[in-house]
Image 1 (tube, rainbow, N blue to C red):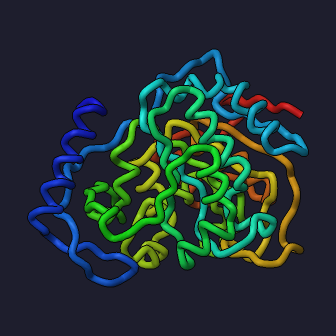
Image 2 (image 1 turned 90 degrees about the vertical axis):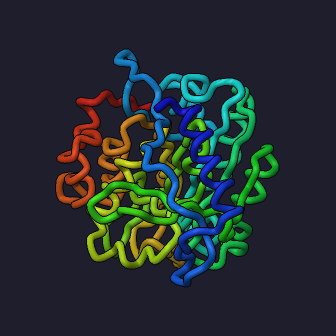
Length: 317
């Protein structure tokens, strides 16, 4: 099924469910009126591969905007990923009621600049959203992401019950689950994680950041967290992954709090291979990719490669 048909048919399903009601969905662990399941169709956000370009790029610069531009230019530039008239959804980490310097959420400067670049490339709309773990309004405000994204022209959405649709993710752990509709009804998806230590999965970078597209009792997925992460990565492969390693949370993740746990790395990565992005990002935490369960499982599931150098890697210092 082509993306246009997918968007039309999922949109019809949402419209129909809004009128007819249907099966309830779980929202923050409570049952609410919701939507009937939409079509079990895997959204296609990826672009055609280009063997002449690296799969992972990284730039180090004291200015995060400069680092973003250098890394993005090295992987082909924004117009490789965004075409005129497309709807783009940007997925930062906005999970926590923390200030930018605490490194629990994506750097707001990077999010705002990505919104600006997408609009400059001709995007019809750029949506910025996430399913926060703490109180959403405080997360979006204190992180600085709401202000930065709106100033750049983005449409910032704090999720409400009506933003969720039931989707069959067809995973081993993740089967039918409430998903934010902005991550299935879009043309392009840009994932913008931050590099952090995580108490359960060892690290949260690109693939783990996709947890933020889900509603429902996400804590249940922690029982088999590696498989859950891989289920999500298989269902929802981003167009582009932009990894914020400007500040890295080394300990007490994913929430953080103490500035003593934060290291300034002044780096931004861009990747078309989310497994390779996680493998390189894990090194900021002193981790080896083959010792991180979900990264190892993702490669075994043919979602990408841990050997980011073999995939094509370029570093700009």
